[in-house]
Image (cartoon, rainbow, N blue to C red):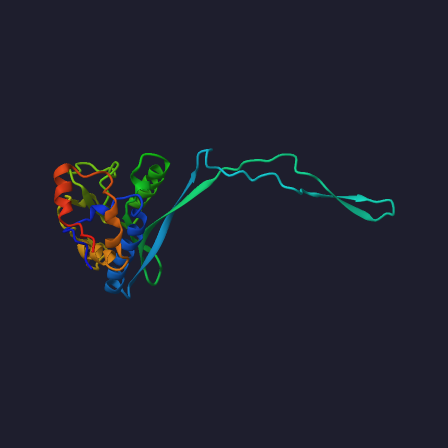
Length: 255
């Protein structure tokens, strides 16, 4: 079943559903891309790992152990007796949340050299803070490398990635080719626009592989049964009143 929306489905923009959609979209993109660029290239699903220390409130106590380190002592018969020391105190350790954010790599099949990286931005990338700074550092490193970058932003919330002369839009796809970093190809997408066909750059002189991102979204929607649960909530951030009224016409009716 295709997504009922003509473009991006804003109901995926919910904290409860985004990570699942993120994985489904990249998996669908991989299935579209891999057979079309084989056998010269392979497409791999990789992941960024973000580690967050949680605030003190939800931290779990390790408790006080009943038994601690054993101490060996010589008994009256010369045999070694084993005594048990009580743990002197209980301690708390920082509780960490580990977040895995997937992305795609295109690599040369023979030498495994990195040819292109395809990123679907997540809230971690876009929210102000350490995760965004970590992503921006990796982005700068990639833009200085001989690999291409395709950056897909299907989230209306938070600050977009830095780019000069960025037009106003709800969503976007940026494609930066290693041979000519600036100007980069930029596809602005409005809420009601269909997702574009994007040329995925490969190693010259190979022609880019053109992928219909709207078809990728339909394939990601088809299968997990999203129509049964994502419409119980509301897009995040909330749509403007006229856009919310427009969106309601596409929401499947129960039953």
